[in-house]
Length: 130
Image (cartoon, rainbow, N blue to C red):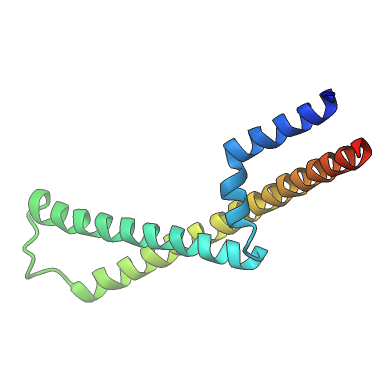
């Protein structure tokens, strides 16, 4: 005998596994703070790398289009400006990332809780059939 409710539950579980299940299970191994920290570290790395690229383009722009002699640049004031720019960008990305990754982790936990509810229902149906 086929139980339609059991088939529906199994289909929902299969859809979840196909769409986000593998990634959710991998990410749910982290505690919330660890998940946020590791995700933010990746974001900070890419933001820092982007700042370096922008800095290179800034100096190239100064040398190529503003006819500034690279030997006459006040590197100390430029370095202070770049450090401030890097700090602002990294702080902004950290704050935004913390908010974003906290929300993602909450959603991940909700999906995992729903997944385990479906598994419990499936187990209950299997017990009832015995």
